Amino acid sequence: MAKIKIFNNDTNRMETYYRNENEAMPYNTNRTLLVREFRGSSNSNTLWTTKRAMQSWNSTRYLYGAPIPVGFAFKRPWEGGHGNQSQHYAGVAFDVGQRLSNSERNRLWNTANNSRCVDICRTAKFNPYLGAL
Image 1 (cartoon, one colour):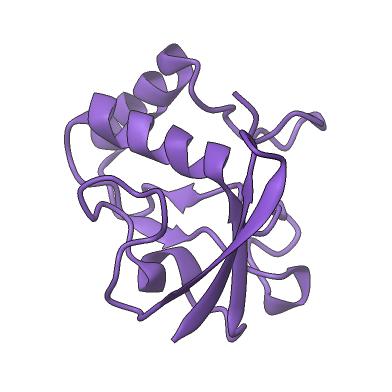
Image 2: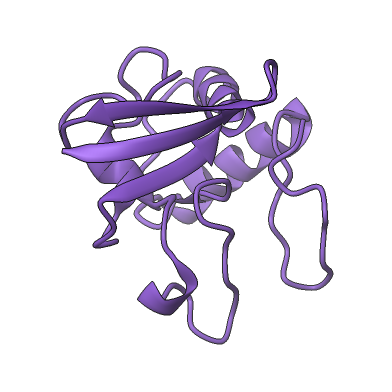
């Protein structure tokens, strides 16, 4: 069972939830993101994210209209990731689309980019607002 800490951007407070691996993440709509998908290969018993990140996931998934494969959304820096290519902030940047075809990945990218619900992570420059709406 995972302990999940979520920063609620509306109340400015941390919330704590306990979920099994096959349960949906808090604030997730229609079970489109399970705890095991969010966790990925992290060994942490405590996971964290923000309500805003989960709402962005819900909106993007709805607009895309199809399942979005998630490699991981939570990894602490010492647990790896893309090595020298990029490092994601734990819990607010989702590694998605790795199993999609190029055309599906392009459609997902265009959906996310046009939605203005998320910020597309680019390694070319630092964005201090990553994960913000």
